[in-house]
Length: 316
Image (cartoon, rainbow, N blue to C red):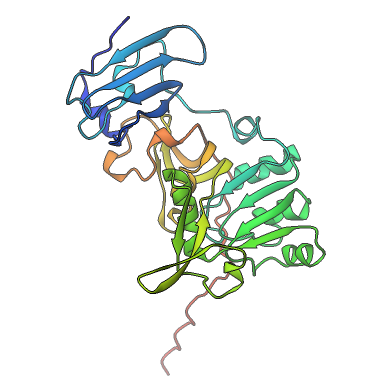
């Protein structure tokens, strides 16, 4: 057995793992290494990397991970953490027909434009897409709808896409509408390992049909199931090769939650930085959640409805 000691704790802030207290070990994966929380003071790392080069066990001393630790600080040199891929097409190589994809963004802000274009080229079909909205005609998810690649949409607002409306009315696409806050919480619960939760939102409406109802403090609530995807397509402003992400403004709405709730998380970023260039205190999504990252290109930054002030009248 070989042991790797943590000498440089600065990197803890860059790629941290929060301990969860409880009777059972907590398992997470860092770049192929399985980390097991055996007790509040000790962590054991099973370094069985997919490449099969070596298998190693390492135990951190008590107190090392009081708030978190970075596997990267004691990885052997033959296993560098680099989640960069060449582009969108390489990132979705494993995407298959019938997959469920979580697509980040709010309106057209923060949508994964490059990944959507790659899915369009790949031609994958019968997809279930989870997104705040259904894009617009000729852009965003609207492109996949026009190409008949989407079987079901789980969304909150779909009023900007006439093509989607026609497909639903014809029975070609199934739609599941969620209150916006409920969709956000379903995704958060999926990422946190919470199977379901109760909410008063939607009680007494079509949203509650067929769902369990319970009363809490005199208020009726309906049971909502957590939501996870096979893939999550994330769009961020800045990122690094470890997968740490920073979002910008409106793009922060659904992207962070979706990044925690999928089997494979792919991030496209506008700016791909070297390690250490991103302020650890500004990271919104830690790299532990991201499986692949690449620098996108050709972003249009469209605005659904542009509203401007009227020009001031010139003085007489």
